[in-house]
Length: 452
Image (cartoon, rainbow, N blue to C red; front, side, top):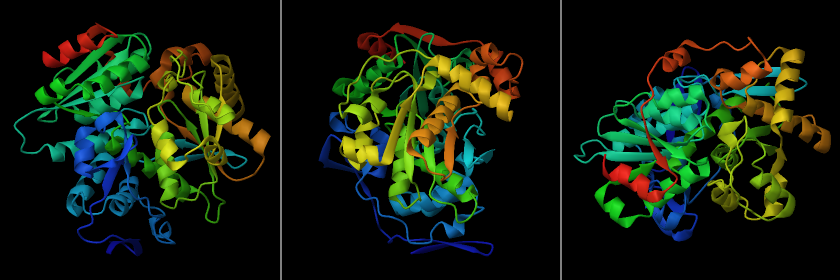
């Protein structure tokens, strides 16, 4: 057992010395690896995703000692409970304090509705929580190696910026970021496609699903993996996923004491964000339900309606980070909620068109003076539908996944002259784009990797 003491507060975290948690593959439960192995591999053999073999709830009252604590401290408690001694205590402290050095404030919107702002990190998106933590974990694992580690990631927008920021200038690691031509906002593109150095941006003539397919195919290419040390920075990597638990707990701790368990509304694309919330719930976070809010890429809402999972090509929308037709993390969701009936009890699904999204942005700004990006607006609409159809007065928390300035072209059409561009985004606009352009073809991508 470990006791963390901070001023007059005590947070009790239970684990046994020498405890090493294993992670199994969603495609084969016989495959089990340590955290280090799972992080370095990214994707499990056979294409499965890693999950912790045990998700034991934290002790009763564990949240009491965390009220008022910063995000990195919450992360220490969650990680220590979940992974035991896999990362030494001092290393874990240093990793999280450096990576998660920003807050996730909860903004009241009236009528027990809240916005959880997840865009206060350096790239102004929720991906900063996971990407910065994972970058530091990988840098620790790669210490002393003479062979470079190549980190592959596909992005529909914000992941690319967060990964580039997390890995830029890190010795011994090079990051390759694939993104679909014309399907990320110009500001998002400038954040990751202008750095150069150990960051390579690969522009793919296709969709996000094509980019994700190319990354997965690289991991199943035995010859390539013998030649290169590959890992992933998408939410398929367990080290990218787990830090996202932090802000769910931070949100709960900012609600008035004695609040009922909230409903979390999650704008969803690849569904890593919602999966992290499900894991936090398994560890003991009070949650009534989750709302999976999507745009026209409605694979999961359709599954909740029909019980049939039907992947399809992604459709381009103004909420581009959610343009995913075959979300990878659905396999993890199915590990926790194994059929449609179980999933419906915990997850409410809703999907919206671009026109509905635009109308919501205008209405919220007119009525409440709050500026929502397109993804947050989809979440807001989903909360309103849930309240209308399901009733209930419990707190409703909409995850706001990105700063509206990252979608300035869309926002200018909807709210002309309202959104200001922060200074760090302005600097990205001044940099020159540096990309490799390829078709959505694995042979072309493989040639890029082998020629690095």
